[in-house]
Length: 443
Image 1 (tube, rainbow, N blue to C red):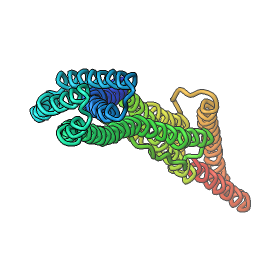
Image 2 (cartoon, rainbow, N blue to C red):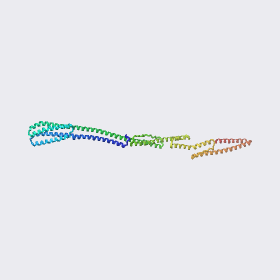
Image 3 (cartoon, rainbow, N blue to C red):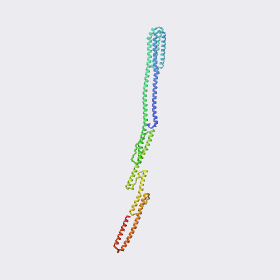
Image 4 (cartoon, one colour):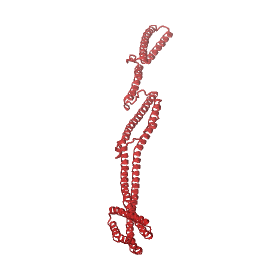
């Protein structure tokens, strides 16, 4: 799916997922920190302060117990008054902290403990203390001491035990809250670590895939372009240079392959442009190979024509049907050139062959120029010269024959003449007839 997205969309989606993951981690952290903060706030401002208030009560009770004991040991009225004021202050402290506990304690067990504390205070401890103070005020120190050592001490023990129960209970609640807060912290820390690892893994995965999805195809395009430039185009250039020098042995291979990247982003578009450019470049290589083949065939055809001409096979021609375009025109032109060169020779040969049979009336009638015209004119002049010569010879033979006849006739008339002259005349006639026969055979 990512390969169909634009690079900007991929990056936006990747960063968006990363930011969304960080936001989820942040929200989870805030929620857990808020929960932890609530627990710590409850621990610090509720459970812990209840323990403090309960401890304030037990401190005030202990102070009051000491004051109750000390007031029986002194006869100093001023000291007694001071001790009574401290007892009142301690009692006030107990009241204030009790009111706070009563307001804040909400659990049933806590309320029961507080109610028990209140009952012991007002129904056991306070009556025993008042009885003790009344005996002191009446001057019955011994009776007061007996009450102190018995009733007051027992009530005081129950009183302190009840407040200690409250302290222990609130301490337990505090410890439980601390344990819950610690568990919340541990759970939150673990979940934050897990989420952090997950977010980091997601970010790394997205970064790797996005980077790999961008860098890998770009490197493929770069490598193919480098190969196209350094191999195909360079070899094609070298082949063209060699061809320009007449060397047709350089063959160019289509070494670079198409990318065929199935991507619709900018890289896919660039790959399609490269594939199109590569197709055109390889088309150029194909055309180079066709040209190389055509020129090679043309060279072979020309070599064959030259060899045929050297062997006297002047009637052979190049096969123009094997070629197209300019190559066909070149072969046809060479054929026409051969026709133009050989035609006057053929015409002259035919005329000479006819003349050799004794017909000296034939002539070369074709329209030729240049050297061919000279050949035509020379053959025709030769015919004219031979025809004139034969005519003259024929006339000479005829004249000689007539003279021979006249001589023969005179010899017969002069039969009586000397035999030696008759024999000479016969020899002359025989020589003339032989010459005439020789001339006729020559023509």
